[in-house]
Length: 305
Ligand code: 3PG
Image (cartoon, rainbow, N blue to C red; front, side, top):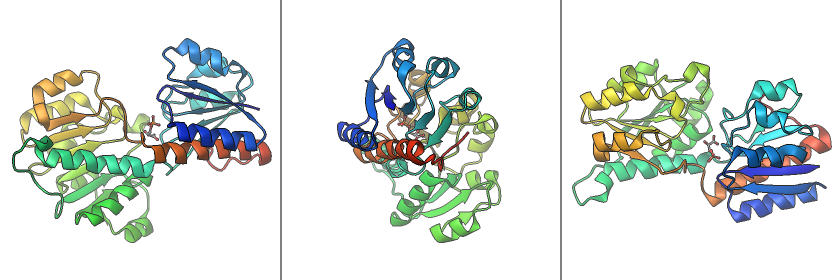
């Protein structure tokens, strides 16, 4: 089978070598399309692909239609909002993700951005510490669990809000469950967002929630930009000069935000959360192995469609 890795933002070289080894040991061949700059390149590359590994690359109905042999798509990572699940299912194509494989990298970035903000971007002025502060994770998936683990080491108190019944997970992780989402925002010095983007979460976080945050509150987004109501968040930041917003998802009009709010906002130039060698190796090789076992045994453990 021809396994295509199509990544606009490529994996580290050692991850690609690991993927190659896993694919070839499984008796398949690897094709690579890295750093592509146009959709036409992706459409041409998928023409003879039996399996596809992507990151945040958009796999829409047009890409799927251009891939007549395609049997499986693995999103090497957590969020699969970039894949048109309905178009894939219609063709009987299995879609999988690799949950947890890049979560530590994303969680570490949360604290990297936080410490930088608490120390006023290292501008020589007096900053503040995370110890003793309250962090709330909006949702409690794989990344939030790593955030909780690290927050314990920093001496923070941790609460979470999840619509799911995860009482045992909360207990094991030593986190308090906030009774409502409003409570989570109202009682957290830092809120770290870890919800997926889906129709019910679109623009969920805006003026109402953010305005509830206590004095000097910091909102951190390493999830998706679509979950933010940007106009509402901007209004909250305008009314509350004590609030900060740190995001791994650069808004389209980032310059306007930076001009308005200065160092109260911080945006990575490109989504950097999962961009570590370790995360690339973990997620990339997991994706390759999942494809090998799908073709060998019909394994669909991580199917999401
Ligand atoms: C994910 O959903 O796994 C993260 O957002 C990482 O995305 P990336 O692979 O494009 O860096």
